[in-house]
Each structure stands twice: as structure tokens, then as C-alpha cells.
Image (cartoon, rainbow, N blue to C red):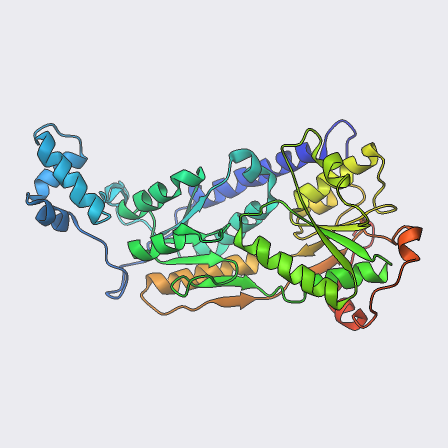
Length: 400
């Protein structure tokens, strides 16, 4: 890695290149039409229904939403209120010059552009969605919003028939989107553990992931490991905390939890100062893990000699830094394909239940090593994990 370029800057550069390529692939292609919706598909309100509710003619409704001045203010307000109550908006898709376009999947991400651009997971997800969507003639509609804008965008996209289904990501505890898509009658699938019976989920089989990671670190002599999370409000954060605690208790490892603070003057130095006795960390985000590995030596901590680092996610970012990141490779592409298959079934009016995809695979690289001597002299963790750990590990040699 060039000395005058930070790990974060490299992540941004490579992410933007991939984002541009994905954008071109997704938006410039012209997939064939998928055909008509089956009679059992979720029904949407019509302009006639809005007109009946408002006590006017369909042409009056059309005039209001086309901005024509020949409708009184009071009548226009009544028409807009009726449209809101029925979740109706003009079908802009039908105005396309090309005639019958294909269906579209809506992906609304409540993140700032800078945090979105630094997270390789989303680039892998978008790239993973493009092929299965193209196979069935769908396109991808993607937007970034603030959290307080989510509901408006969901209602607008669905009411205007810009999309035919939604994929929910970054699902939060008590996430209002679950009730919203059910209220709208919009087909939706979430990525993560099932939360609501009305919204199918695609879940990664993570039951043994922490056992695998802690088994690997335990064999290296680590007896105190910290988990570093960067999104405390997400539903999966609490679930991961619980699985990490259970796996650590089963293997006799001291578990601790540290939150990543991006607002600190020096987030890496601030984090390292709060690790206590931990000689290894498991970081939720590989971009953050790469930043830690790149910057730790500058504040006097060598990786892996003094601190071993494991990333919960794996991507091309893991091999940009030196030492290269030991990481868990998640089946992002498999999750994307499974989600598209479920959404297609829902749009056709067919039943679709939650699915579980394959688990994460530990890829051992260079950022994990033997625990420092004082830690190795402490009581060793339980040894009854070795066979379970090795079965799901992959070791990468330098240059592979």
C-alpha cells in the first residue's frame, strides 16, 4: 500500500470504482418485460378509487397531479387527502416512452453517502443483486436517505409504482418499516434474522461463526477477546453480542465489548486505549478493521505481535492492508440470489417463507498471531473446540 495514501482513502477509491461499474451494469441494461401481475398479487389503488373517495371525476384527479390550475384549492386538497389515504400516486412508470418496462426492486438505505461509500458490504450486495435481477428482467432502484425520510420514500415509490417490491437492510430494533410495508401491501424481504412473520427473512447461518473465530484465537493462546461494534441500533448487533458471549463462555475466553467511536479525534487510538486486557479483537466492519491495522503501529501497537485483529466481514478491502486481514467471508451473493427468488415469488402472489443460507467461512491471513507472552502464560481456554474450528477455516498463503 502506498505510504502517502491511508487505508480509508484506498477503500473509498476502490468502492467508488465498483459503485460506478455496478451503476452502469444495473441502469444501462434494458431487461425484457416480465409480463402482467397475477390476480393474487397485492392490489394497488386506482385513479378511479381516488376519484370516488374524493367525490370527483378521474379527470379532476389527473388535473391535480399534473399541476393544472382548473381545480379549486379546496377540491385539490380533498383529492390529495384521498390519494394519501389510499397510498396512491400517479403511475409514472406507465409514462415511459418505451411502453412496458420490466419490474424494479427498491433498495432504500438510510445512511450518509460517506459511510455508505466506506462499507464494502453494500457494494458486494449490489453486485450480487444485479445478475439474479437481470435473469428475471428486473432492475434495481437504489437511493440513500436520512432515517427520517425513509417512510416518505417507501410511500412515494410504492404509490407511484416505481418499484414492485422492497429489500430491507440494516434492520433496526423495533424497525417501523416492517409494519409500513405490510400496511402498503408491498412485497418485501429483509436481510437478517426473522423479526416479523409478515416479512420473510434471508438469514446467514451464524450459529457457529463466533465459536470458529474464538477457537482459532484460543489455539493461538488468546484468553481475552473484545468484540468491536459500530452500529449499536441495528437488530443484528444485539444478536451478535449474545452469540459472542455464549461462544466465549463455552470456550473459557474472557469476552468484552467495545464500541467504535468515529467522532473521536483519533478513533483508532481511542479504541485501543479502551481494550484493557484484550489481546485480540473481532471487528464488525472490515473497513474499520483495516483502519485499525493500518494505524495501530503509529500509536505503538503492532499487529499481530501485540494485537490480533479479525474482521466479521470479508472483501477486497481485507487484502489492501498489511498485514492482510483474517476475516469471515459471508455468503453475500447467495443471500442476494435467495432474496431475489423470494421477492419474485411474492410479486407473483405465491407463498414465500424465510430462508437460511450457508454460514460464514473463516479465512486466516496475517492479522492474527500468537498472543503476547503474558497472555499465553495465563490459563489456556478449553481445548474441546479444535475439530469444529478447523472444519470451517481456510488458510491463505502470501500471494494467493
